[in-house]
Length: 235
Image (cartoon, rainbow, N blue to C red):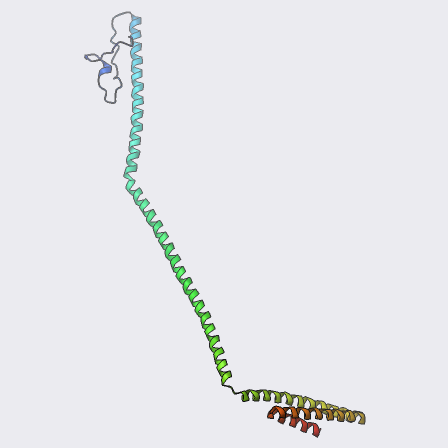
C-alpha cells in the first residue's frame, strides 16, 4: 500500500481519514489492509503498512490523550483557584484591615504620647514659673520690710551687735587678767608691774573708744564700754 492510497473501512464508502474524529482531526483506527489479491509478499507488505499506520494512529491518540490530560489538569487548577478566590480575597482584605488597624493604633499611641509630653512640659514650666514668682514675692516682701524699718532701728541693731562684740572682748580680757594675776602671785612683783602697765594701756584704749562712741551717738556701745572700764578698774 502506497502513501497515496486511501484506506477504507469495510462496509463503508468513506475513507478512514476523512471521517470526523471525536477527539480532533486525527485519523481513525484502520480496520485492515483489505489486501487479498497478489502474492504472499505483497500481502504481507500491505499488512506491515497497515500495522505501521495503526501504530501512528495509536501514537497520535496517546499524544492527544496526554494533551487532554494536561488540559484537564490545568482547568482543574484554574477552577480550584477560582473556587478559592473568595477566601484569598477575604484573607487579603483581613490582612489590609489588620495593617490599617495597626497603623491607626500606632498613630493614636504617638498622639497620646505627644499629649502627655506636652502636659509634662507645661507642668514643668508652670513649676519653674511658680518658683520664680515665689522668689519675686519674697524679694518684694524683703524690700518692703527694709523700707518699713527706720534708720534709727538699723543703727540700734548695729549698736547691739557692737555691744555684744565688746562684751565678748571684755570677757576675754577679764579671763586674761585673771590668768595674769595668778601668774604674778606665783612669780613675784615684776609680773605684777607688767600686768598693771597692760591694764593701764587697756583702760586708756577703752576711754578713747568711749569718746568715739559718744560722738557717734551709740549709747549701747557706750554702756558696754563703761562696763568694760569698770571691770578693768576693779581688776
